[in-house]
Amino acid sequence: MDAPSPWIEQAVLHDGAEARTVAGIWFGTDSVMKIRRPKGYRHPSLDQSLTKRRLFAEARILLHLSNTGLPVPNLLDFDEKNSTLVMTRMSGIPLFDVLRNSKDERRVTSLMNSCGGLIRKLHSLGISHGDLTTHNLLCDDFDTIQLIDFGLGRLSPEIEALGQDLQVLSECLSASHPSHNDAMKFVLNGYSKGEEKGPSINDVISRFQDIQGRVRYHG
Image (cartoon, rainbow, N blue to C red; front, top):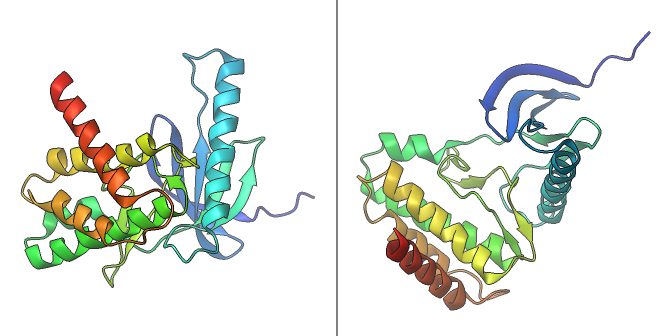
């Protein structure tokens, strides 16, 4: 007789091009399983290599952050064969929804400052996120900002990747949350007040501004 599965699936949270994210219970803990998908348009050996590399990179980042106190998921299981990660489920809701529904500018200002501070903490630990959108930033009942989905993250990134994190968030705020037109200013304010540890705060912000200039020039 087969042993019972430690995983009880509940609901699909996101069905994206790169991965499927499913809510469930893992050994009694509210969890999320991320299942990386094969890509039919890539050669199978290349696809397998890329999937494996990204899976390992995300697992390493989560392990690296596990004792830092940052509000990120804890890694519970890693299955290379089935290309899955199981992580604790965070309690927050996407910042995307908060910003879309909130008209309290004082609260929004505070949240964006908090985002900047959290991003700086991540960067000071030598990690870039790679996909900093308001869907991957969560907000809990206490207005604590949380970070999820490190599938495109990097350990020991170059300064360009850190500046690109800020650029991705800036573009997201402009496109998805135009009513909060000062939001990025408060993100940078929070970022600039972070620990001067690791890559220089001024260097990262300067690189972000360089990237912005390049985007405008080529856009």
